[in-house]
Image: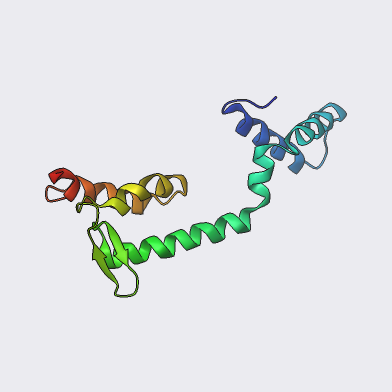
Length: 128
């Protein structure tokens, strides 16, 4: 079974072995066993749909980019008027709500900018 962070190492080992032109019979069996274990695993499902994942990340980047450009630090973006609105006490609700998504999607620059904005002295979160 693949457990903990070891599964990444096992996958990398299998990929390295598959790139070698000649495999010993024992190595080939290990690679085939690992591939059998990976079929149907969560890792296999996640990597099988990379184009979909990239489209979702692109949509997030566009939507968050619009918020950052027109309403950064405000609670919400009003998309038609392209202005910000503070319906949640001006605490930067969209920034707070976006932090985990930005981190999971690997959007570190946007994540860091959001955290910096929330740490500012005049931030609505600091006043709350």
